[in-house]
Every structure is written in structure tokens, then in C-alpha cells.
Image (cartoon, rainbow, N blue to C red; front, side, top):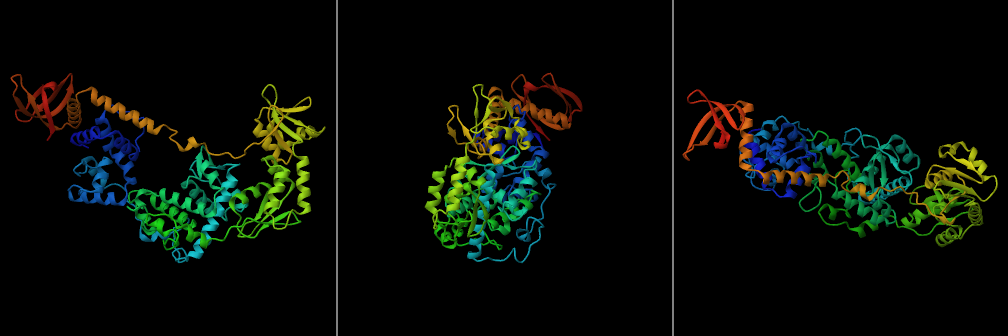
Length: 586
């Protein structure tokens, strides 16, 4: 980096508007609390080799190729989108010349060696197979879309009440990966990771600390129709694509080109393969990269042909067969709202286009704890049943309703959580249940108290299959929502990045407005010349108003004076900085 470089970039930064500066700071991944005093500090930092190496991996192929050509030829980047983008990132001047500080390190930046074959590589082993690269017909893709939809819905339903563990590396915890597989939500570990990634990219799941949680959008998604679910997720996946994978019309580049999109990012090849795997799983593309008929308009920048997708998907049903063995059989994919409510009262045993659900005392009790009652469940099941309400199921509903609420969890007058019972001796069982030891239940007369919250006590008792109800201060039953959704604020700028950037820009502007910018640039240039022991050409204004030029080997700067050896007369000179009109490194 040279002082000329820094001054040119600093001048551009000072002239740019706030939004452009904030966009640059974000793109260059500058810390909002950067200790910069003025725009010259900012320019020096942005042109530092480490900062260039940090920012370069985010450059798409078009910008890398434009920089390659400019650096190799010594010519400016031609006028156009590439020049504008590189200037906005602080890589070139407004006229397209790469800054010398960037040119020096450009050739040493690591390059990836992605090839066209990488697009057909699986995320697991990196090897393409004939099956991976095959072209599927739309019927096969529709079946895959339906399967992926079911998996994502199952993952969200399992995650809402019990968030998934997230490792320090940001991946799904091994224990929860096994939980999803055992529950039948996904067939294997690789699919689990892909489904989680799809949920995150679509905004249905969000990281919260060391957990993955369902978002409010994800919770609403569960109540939408099948086609709407697939289409909204597909749009979100397209919108979440990195800029280099998008076309000017708003669609996407052929997946075969994705692994080569960011040639300076060593980690990009693996990420591109994961993205391709996600898109194949969601049936946005087949193994050859072709979009199905219903997604072809989306690929071109338009919208999904939902009617074409609806024709390919199995029709949803709104009726089930209730049987005497406490099972229910859905003859086709249930409407999402019906499926969600049915699964509050029954455990799904098999998942296919025809699914099986089983009722039990525990599952019905869970539905009652979640807000159902015997009457509402009877009305719901009778309304969707093609076979009426079998007597064994009706009896189980009545029995569960009689038992429900024998234990009640609320707060006492002091605000502590308490458990009371309608039958003598019920509390004695709780007091000796080793599974409830974490609650620290303490007997106090005709009740048990705990330091745990009402929610914690209620759900632990419910999970232990006790007939428990939550009550308010007046003893009336209230419904607790077990879903632990991501806080909407988690999607906002929690770390104050935007606020921090605006404060940083404001500080730089204040420094620029408070002082003499030309004098500040001159002082920085002289400091750099002294550090480099460089020869500078300085113009000095004499007392009579005339100017005189000197060529000095700068040796010191202090007390408002520049010291250096005059190259012409070989004498040491000391010049007042206030009299120096300009300085230029020779």
C-alpha cells in the first residue's frame, strides 16, 4: 500500500454516502467497533494485505476475472457492472485502476480448483455417480417433493416442543440427529442435515444459542396446504442463494456452474455441493440440474406453476378410518391442519401416502394437556371419521377425561410453584418418584412445592404420564403452549451491527468535518514516507509567497517539522510542515 493509494481510497470513502459505506463495511466484514479515527485510517485498514485476503473469498467469479485481467494487463477494469462493484468494495478506483496495495497481494491469494464435475458430487464423498447425474421425470420429482415436505414438517413438529441441539460448529447434535431418525422424520443422518439446512435457508428454523428452534414463520407454515408449503419454501431457497448463483432476471444459474462461482473461497466447493444436494432433495432440480415443469418459471425469474405441481402431487384427504384397535388410517396424505391436530391426540406409527396413527391413554392425555377436552376431541374425530367413533376409542376418551386434572400445577400466594391433588395419596406417589427428583418437590401440608417454574413442573409431570392440568391463581384450568419458538428478535440485528456501523461512519464523518482534510492527508503521507525512508518531492511556500521544490530522503517528522536529506545539495534540511503545499513519493 502507498500513501497515494490510501489517500485516493480515503477521498472516495469521504465522498460516498452512508448507505454505500455501510454496504462496503458489511461486505468487507469490518468489525463495527473498528478503532478508526478518520477516513485515512479506514483506507489503510481496507488496503492492508490481511484485510484483502479476508474479503477476497466473497468475490464472485465475474469480479475475480475482472481483477485478474486488470492486474495482469496493468489496465483499468472496463467500465460496467464489474468496475462499479469493485469500486464499491474498495478494490479499484472510480476509474477502474486496482489499488497498488491490492495488486501486490492479488497473485498470492489461494485459488480453488473446482471443475464442472464437482456439481455432480455428493456432499458426503465428493464423487459423482451416474444415478446422481441422471435426468428424472416430473413424476419422480413430485414424489421426491412430497417426501421432502413430509420430512420437513415432521422435523418442525418434533422441534417445536423440544428444540434440537446445535454444536459449536453450528451443526445438528448427534443425539438429536438420532432422535429425528428414530422418529421416522428422516431416513438417515445426511438427510437430517439437509432438511435442517433447508429449514434454516427458508426461515422456518433459526439458531438460538446452542439450539435450533422453529420460527414463528415455521409454526405458521405447518398449517398451510401442501402446495403452498412447497412453493413458499422453494421461493425462500431461491432468494437465499448467494448473489453469484442468481441471474439478472431473478432466477438461478445452472447448478453445474455453482462450484466455480467463488474461485477465491477454499470452502465454497463443499458449500456448493451441499446447496445442490438441498435443491435436489426439495425437487427444485433433478440430478442433471433440470428444473421440473412447475419450477421452470421460477428458474427463469418468475413464479411457481402451482397448478402443475398440484396435478403431480397425491391428492390430500380430509377423512380417516377409525378402527376398534385404537388406530386410525388415513387413505392418503391428510390435510396439514387435520394431520397436525390428529397428531396431538395420536402417535403416528407409519408415514406414507396412507399413514397409520395409534391412540393411547398417554397420547389422549397429552392432547388434553394441550388444550383439548373430551367433547372437542369427540367432535373432531367424529367429523373426520368415515367409520364413526368406535366404542373402544370413545371409552378411552371418557376415561382419559375423568383422570385428567387429578393433579394441578399452579402458584401459591408467595409465588412458588405448587402441586395439589383431588385424590388423597396422589401426592405421595410424586414425592417418591425418582424421575421427578430434578423438580425438588417438597411436601408442605396438602401440597408439594417446587422452585421450578409452573411450565417445567407441568411438562415433566405430563411427560411422566401423570394426569396433570395447569391452573391459574383462581384455580381455573389454563392451557400451556409447549412450543419453544425462536424469538422474532433472533432474526433481527441482535449484535447491533447496523447501529455500530452507523456510529462508526458518523465518527469518521465528524473527524473529516472537524479538521483540514488536506492537511490530514499531507500529514499521513509524510508519516508514511518517514517510515519507509522514502524520497519525497515536496513543494514549500516561501515567505514571499513563491514556492520552491525539494527532493528529500525523509528521515524524521516531529514538532511540526519534516527532516530529510536534500538529494540535490546533499545537506540536511528541516522544513515547517505548515509551509509544505504538497508532497509526493518519488
